[in-house]
Image (cartoon, rainbow, N blue to C red):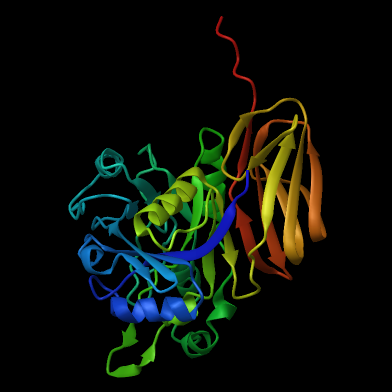
Length: 350
C-alpha cells in the first residue's frame, strides 16, 4: 500500500482562549514554517471553526478543542461536532464517552506535565488512569519539556536558546505508553501546547514564538491518499484517519527534517506499518530506515532489543510484542515511532 507523508503540528492556542496570537497570525507563522496542517485546540471552544477551518494557501487549518477541567485530565478532542464544556468535571470517563459519542478522537494532553514555577504554566497532569476508551496520548509535550528546566536564574539563557532545555518525552509518559500498549493500541503524538505569550509590560518579548515552535516538534502522518486541495473535508478526514490508526511518528525537526523515516514489518509476505496490529506468526523482520545517520533503538514492550548507528536497521523478531523505535542525533532525541503490535495467539478457553 502506498502511503503519503504530510507534516503538521497539534495542540495550539489562539486568542480564542489563552493564546497570545490571532488565528490569522498563527496561519501566517505555520505557512512560513512549511507545515501541511495545523490542529488548533483552544480551551473549551470551537468558535474559530466556522471562520477559519479549511485551506489557507498550502496550509490546512483544523479547529478542534482542548477540554479543560479545572482539576486536570485535559483532553484533546479531535473531530467533534459540538464543543464540550467540562470545567467542573471530576472524572474523565464521561468526557471521553462524549468525544466518542460525537465520533471524535480522544487524546490525553500533557499527561505528565507536572511542574509549577513562577511562569504562568499550571500543573495539569492526567489523573484518572482508570478511565478507558481514549485513542492516544501526547508522548512528548514541548511546552512542558521546556518549562521543566526553567528557573529565575536560567530563564534569560533558555529564552534565547530554548533548544538547550529540550530533553525529550517524559520517561513516565513513555513507560505508561508501553504499559498501555500491551493491552490495546494507543496512539502516541507530539503536542506543542503553543501559546505565543508575550511578557506583561514587555510586549516585544514573546515566549516561544509560534513560528519557532512550528519548526520544532512535528507529527508526520502517513495518509492513504494525498491531501486534496479541492476538498478540505476530505483532507481533514484523511488526517483524522491517520492519527486514529497510529500511522504517524513524532519528529523533533529542529535538529533535522525527519521526513522519510520509516518503520515497518515483513511477516509471511505481508507488510505491516506503524499503528497496525497482527497476530505474530513465529518470525517477522522489522525494518527501520532513517533519512540521516542516527542512533537507532528498537524496543519491545519498552525494553531495548537492538541498537545501531546508521541509516538502516533490520532485526528478526522471534517473539510477539509491541515494537517501536527511537532515533537520536548525538544525545538529542529526534524520532519516536508509533508501535507495530505483534500479538501472541490468544489462549484457547478451557
